Image (cartoon, rainbow, N blue to C red; front, top):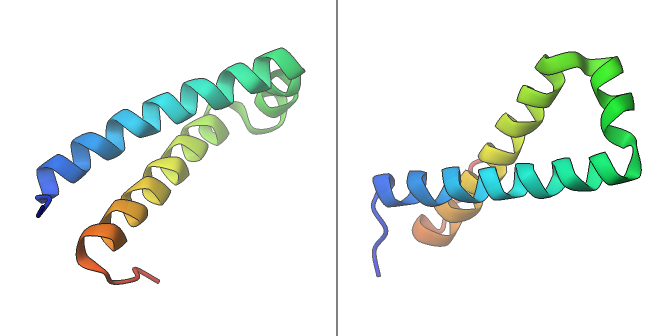
Length: 70
């Protein structure tokens, strides 16, 4: 099955949200969220989300096209 760019972007966005929520809950219950926010503020949290988005996108791109991005 050929996955178009739009489908890949929708999947990546959904999985990034789920991953962000799961990571946020883990950090909240372990107490790491307070430390992380104190040191990196909102920009660190946004940056973490962007990195997760890129990782999911690279995964689906490689799965669909077969090429490495790096």
